[in-house]
Image 1 (tube, rainbow, N blue to C red):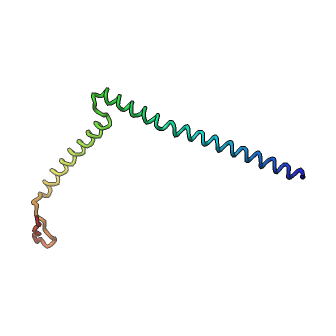
Image 2: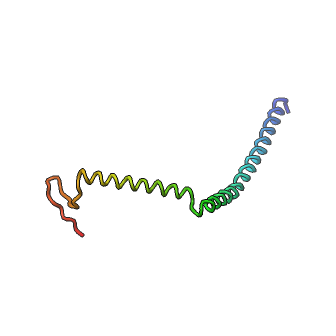
Image 3: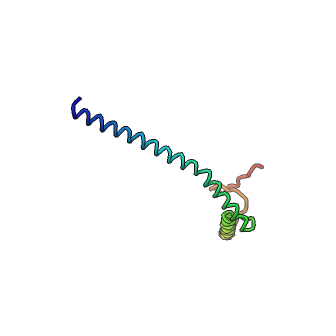
Length: 105
């Protein structure tokens, strides 16, 4: 066997061995990461439960969202009053030719 072919065989063998070891190392890292997922979820749920208990049984995130919804509702009521003053609602539907359309119930 020539010197060039021995070098080529050695380099390809080293490269292949390095790739195999690398793939196994990456698989092990992924396996450990996947294993940490449920552990982190359990810890997160425990912290959330403790925060809820410390807040008197009220979830702070839900309370914040409730306040946002309440302020949005009040804003929409103000807008409705403003627009009803500008254009009162009669409950009638009229066409562009000012014909009254009867709604079927």
